[in-house]
Length: 352
Image (tube, rainbow, N blue to C red):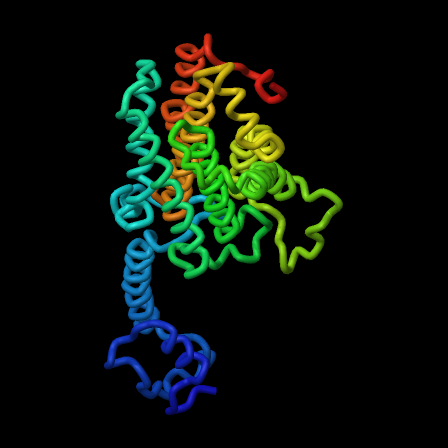
């Protein structure tokens, strides 16, 4: 029944959108007795629609402003317009990514040296030192990120293993520390004090390299159905499947360092001294390949953070990262095998 008091249901509608002061809470004429109490007048509908359009425009604009702060680790950013995406510079303009970019820049210089076959000079040794120091620093900073929550997407904490942003950063930090240790231990600039830890550090690094493939595999295939409760550990989304497959591919390559670690753990300095006498360039090769892995890891995490922020969808980021891997790892590794081929061993040095 229509009365001279504001209609409750219509007043509730008005509260959900901005309304004009002249219309809000005004009594409805008794001439509307034949109308239902929830049916507003034509003029009221016009006012509401206009205000709703205004409100929709404001919320759309606000959503565009917030795109840079969204995370797209679970659902890719395919629906975001290019105009609303943050730039690479906006995303990487922070201390963590600037350190990673510095590592990648050093990696580009090292790649040039490998393509040219320039190893026997002080500059390459200095680049090795710089890479090792930056790698250790990056690993410590990454674990510090996890501890403090800096640039960690907390909304993915309940996701399965390595698709959690927190877990993938733990993995990256441990991995970069491990390859930095291997790059130093295998090089000609390894300090004597580091060799005293051959009973401990090689085993730790071997476990990290083994888990580099094992954890993505568990994330993907859920062996033994260990993730049964979908309310606490939901199934992987399409975007998470893409990410997990990429991590598995990288992890399988990382496993090639595990035999080196086990050999160092079992043979120590005596074994490595024999190897470097029999194969003079083995030290350069093993140290350099570990450095290549370090560069790729840093580039991988930059790509991860850019895709997470919505700079570009994963379907664009992943091919771009493959090109970066080609430049930072595959090409220089092939060049190193070409230039150092006469003074290295592929497999026999493990038991020499």
